[in-house]
Length: 119
Image (cartoon, rainbow, N blue to C red; front, side, top):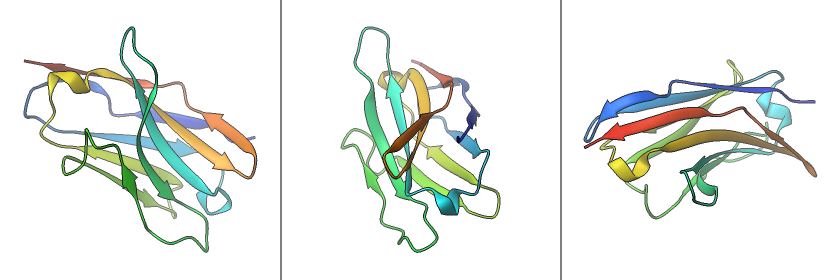
């Protein structure tokens, strides 16, 4: 079982920045990859960014087109934490942001953190 706890959400003006954190209850080196997803009211949940976290994984990250150049996903294996640095935020980035971990065939989700960007 892997527990994920997100933090760092809040209210920010357009053009501002936030950094989200996702702390795992276990070593992320034992997890294949971790993702950030988001879901706005009335919309489907969408994948925002992915990073491999396994001990033998590389560092190739992927991003949704809508956040490329603005968001950066990173990891700190020593702290068992994955981050999402969000810059140049737009009102359309307003959503609940969720962390997800994939270990083999098992999927784990965090409870989410709200990000609200005012215009």
